[in-house]
Amino acid sequence: MSEKRSGEDGILDLIAKYFPNRHPHMLLGRGDDCALMTVPQAAALGNSALFAVTSDIFAENAHFRTSYFTASDIGHKALAVNISDLASNGAKPCAFSFNLTLTERQDHAWLEECFQSMADLANRYDMVLCGGDLTKVPLTRTKEKTQEGLDPLTLGGLNIGITAWGTYEHGGVPLMRHRAYAKNLAAEKNAGRSVQADRPVQAGACMREGDILFRIGEIGLARLGLFLLEETQDKAKCAEKYPHAVNAHLRPSPLVREGLLLSRFAKEFPLFVMDISDGLMRDIPRLLARQGLVFADEKAFGADIVLTEDTLSSEVREYCGKNGLDPCLFAYKGGEDYGLAGVCAKEGFPALQAFCKKHAVEHFHALGAVTNGAVTFNRQIAEEAGFDHFQ
Image 1 (cartoon, rainbow, N blue to C red):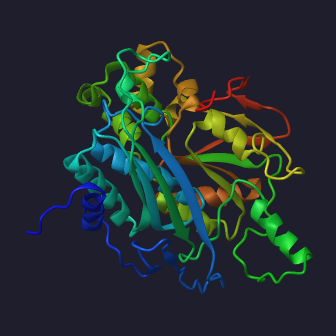
Image 2 (cartoon, helix red, strand yellow):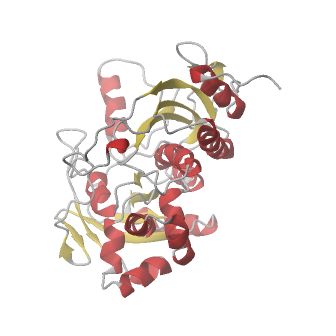
Image 3 (cartoon, rainbow, N blue to C red):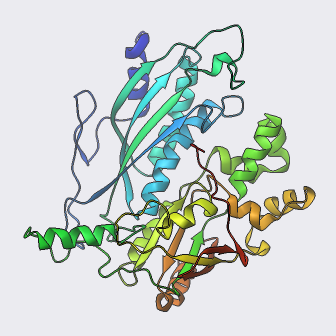
């Protein structure tokens, strides 16, 4: 057996152990300044260059705590949140890179556990690691806690930044939150640039009053997992009573299959879709273009959101019942659900229901109707903004 190298070379050796450097989509792999990726011909779409790109940061004490996240949990979730973005865009995961900022607390065994878990998830979707960067930061050592009350050893924490790519070789069309892509194509055409007639876009996609909001996936479970873990800092104890909630927070399952199905359905009926990462309370206004408008003339819509207890997890209902909480409001606030939220034309919604039933899509539920007014939740104005890292 060859001798283990130390330092950065040793980490690179460990990466090579778990992540192959050859893939049909990768012309030039890790080891150069850039990787060269090719998107396969997509005959059904007439397009050979379109691919989706997403990026996320997974930061200690912002997104996870090492007190109850294992190295395996961290490796899994860091990649899973990026895959969820690809799923919401209807893209088939293809490749990723990561930038890893380590501290002195991560030894070889920790890295091996983290990479093994991340590789297991990547292999599930045939994703190749095509590059990234590594660095190490010292821990700040002081005798007293910071003004914010943080333990000094948590400063200069672990961070993983991942960029992931996906393709549309499966024959679907891109799913979008807004009409941005369609407008960009129109702008290209008006500017005299050549635009393929069969470019994969939801032609004429336009959100209207009366369209139907829907969700796929559980909501509120990850929020419950976070509450329990923050309260006890004891993963094993929490998992005894609320196993699905703990797993939803620590090891979310991206809805790739569901996203690919929706991208096929969108060839017939336009859909607007996004992943539910900050909870429905925060993400629905984004989907309706009430926050972060893409274009100055993008119309902001409202919605009458309706949630009923029978559509929620039994663990959420049990916890809320024992603690005097409204389970529907608890789930609506959510956070880190990594399900899918979307809008479908009213006339196309029965077909979407039948399509999801045919393909055994679980946890598919209507949420309500798009309006020209405010966003309401169970007949009340939704006054809270939901989760925001910067507020």
